[in-house]
Image 1 (tube, one colour):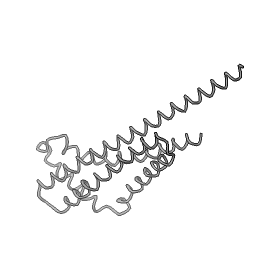
Image 2 (image 1 turned 90 degrees about the vertical axis):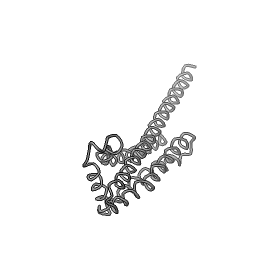
Image 3 (image 1 turned 60 degrees about the horizontal axis):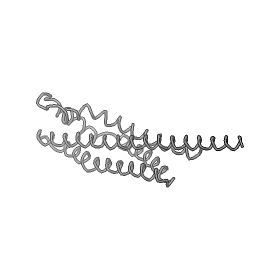
Image 4 (image 1 turned 45 degrees about the vertical axis):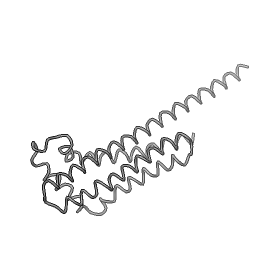
Amino acid sequence: MAEERMQSAKVVLILCSCFFAYGTYWSDWSFDYYFLWANLADHPNAVARATQYYANQLDAPDIIKYIPFANLIIAAFGLSAGLANMTDGNILFDGASLVLMLFALSTYATSVKPAIKNISETNVVNELSKNLKNIAAAHFIITLAITGIVGLQITHYVLNKRADNAERAEAMALAASKKSE
């Protein structure tokens, strides 16, 4: 029973962290959309709006810049709780989730951060468009990694629940057969 609660708490921590990240990238989507899925010629203000949006992120108060770290700590705590159980399922599902999380972090660190810095340092439209496309593509890749984490965690949770229910049913059947003897 305690292990079941730990598994549920772990999944809740990881999913809360993932959905917070989804919200963060959803707010960026209103700017990223034009660079991935639309013709920029049809939206002449897209570059200027996105440039201003991302340049303003560099000027945000420090507390706002550090909030994503709290989100990562929550996810890391959940993944650590899962990996601490050392079952095959936890190692596979939580290990794969950890790999996806590290992939998303490295994508952010190597694509988004440098592109945002470059945006604040240039006024050349082609260079701005290139950096904004890089940001949009990186956000899309990060969102796919987060979706993978959500899928892995939900699948692992469902499989654990099925296994727990099967064990309970087996124990009840065994107890019933012993009573009838």
